[in-house]
Image (cartoon, rainbow, N blue to C red):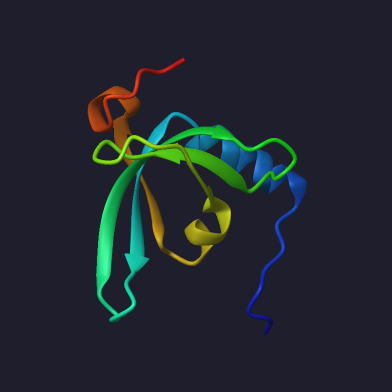
Length: 93
């Protein structure tokens, strides 16, 4: 069985629809093997790059881009029930 699963366009569109304007928990693995959990807000899909999304953090209000579909399928990203306002202080559009 291959390690990489390809997702049809419909799945990518569905993922974008459920993740934009949501709070997520993102687990980073540090260089020493430790796992750090960050809460971030998904702001918008990056044009042309359909699995990449603009995100920001409450503790570090800078704009970042990540391949969130990849992180989600690898189990490193979890969509939480919180809204943008509750989690990051970033106002919805």
